[in-house]
Image (cartoon, one colour):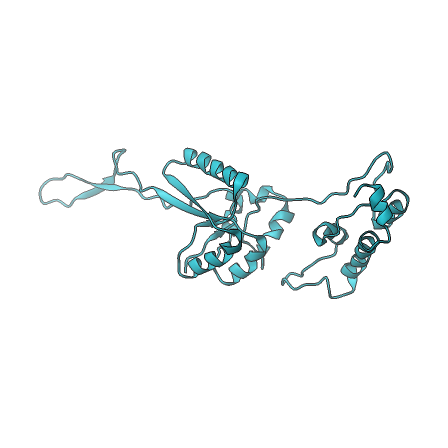
Amino acid sequence: MKRFQFIITCFILASLVLTACRLTPVQPGAAPVLTPAGPSATAPAPVTLTIWHSWSGAEADTLAASVTRFEAGNPGIQVKLQAVPAGQLLSQFIRAAVSGGGPDLLYGRLDWMGALANANLISSLDSQTSQLGLDRLYQTTIAANTYKGRVYAAPIASTLVGLWYNTDLIPTPPADSDQLLAAAQQVGLALNASFYAAAGFLLGAGATLFDSSQKATLDQGGGAAQRVGGETMTIVERVVRGAEKGLVTRLGG
């Protein structure tokens, strides 16, 4: 079964170097001798890499420009881009991959990684971490692309959720959630109520969402998850459920 590289941010070709040979003329009756061919040897056949993605607009244009630069610097390698609707990308990839088809590289969502790895449809990047430059990235981004101790994907971006504060109102930012709530009582607080934005309160205090076997731990109770989760919900409830709506209005949130 063919396996594929998953979410690769640069294009890599692991090529087998073959030394072409030619026959050297010898005296009649003698055995022919094989010697390395010179510059006139036939050039290796061009290589084509196929990439599936679901990007459109400016993102697709940027990807196409990157491919153009790559091809210019790597003669003999052609990159074929194929756009697939986002809602169909995973299912089309699985159907193609199980039959030995599909792309060489796939740009996809991180939460696909576990299922594709378990199905043996993507290959590990463990032997290519230095070549890909993964050892120069923040290790938290690599950990996010690791499944069962093996790296299966290269990150295309890393985003951060920050706490912005008005220095005219709060000269020194709060050091913990207790100080944050205290400041909110005085000058207000605007908070994005999504789990993505609130996760910083959990992870920043050492809580985890999953254990090493990918089992959810946030709902198990006890430890940092329960303590920090309670603090996070205190903030969310005060803002979203109405107790602190006036504070949000004052901040224009």
